[in-house]
Image (cartoon, rainbow over all chains, first blue to last red; front, side, top):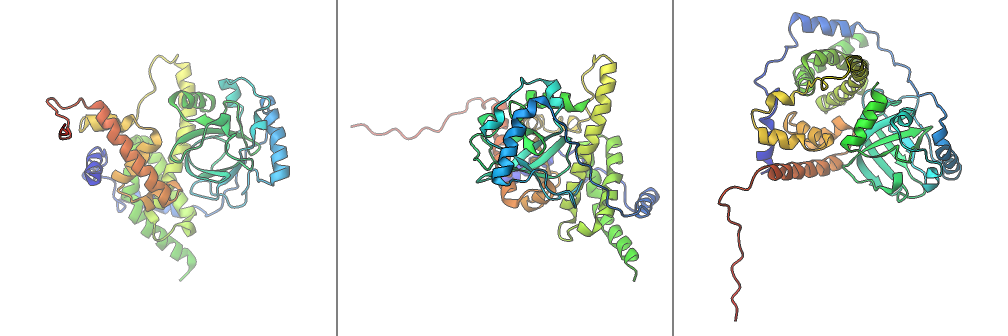
Length: 202
Length: 185
């Protein structure tokens, strides 16, 4: 059954083995490789988002300060060797407690667009007080392949109370290493995603 | 032997291995033009990060690079596209470079069922059936663990099967299996 489904799906492959590709031995391929190999190998400096204070995040920031002080959780770790393209160390974000929702501002695409960090990710693990997501797409401000949300106060209060489920996709925004609540993060739905695309696409 | 020569040799060996599958990977997910742009960027990243390429998972690792490079490229392109679209008064729907369009004729039911799944499920199924990767390799590509991928894959397969049934009308004349009638006293 499994093999049948796999085979049937393979039948949809627009680039099945019968479709030709350019061979590595053609002159133009060889030129490309030569060009690449003449590129100096230098590590590119990491680009970090500029911290920017937004009024709608006052509550989040205050709560986060508490979380950092008490729990010693790390905001935006890494920085020395994070891989901008392949799987570097995960980005760690705080997903603090319910106090973080103390000062919500009504959701709008304009407000959403102010978030310095935004991505869509799939939950790969929920482990005690940490949620690990694989980043499916960075909309803004980051490049890590994985993001870990730390919730020292427990996961119940997370993101308007929606639970994180392994395999589900979420849209997350963060500020200064802290997950934004108040409707600025949540389960990925086509409508919600459209808002993210609108906010960060143009 | 100088290390520069070794480096070139290793890159050429890896390039030979990934040249064809990477082109396929990209063309499955992007237009010819976009694939070409991203392809050379991916190879450049492989060259720069040569020391990090795991020798037992060259291809899945390279797919991971391609995945992120394409995603970054898309975001940049989307910004430009949106600006142009706005200027063009948004009369037309976004141009659809989805390669899936071309294959709908082959197995329209399955293509439609696949399209109805969340994008993460679609992608894991593609990596499994098109790139022919096993969960361990998919994990390398997605930066996940083999266990998590196995779980996601089996869920995605189940969702696909359900999506397929939902669309298919029940076969005519289908008779449900009925349990043998219990004998009554």
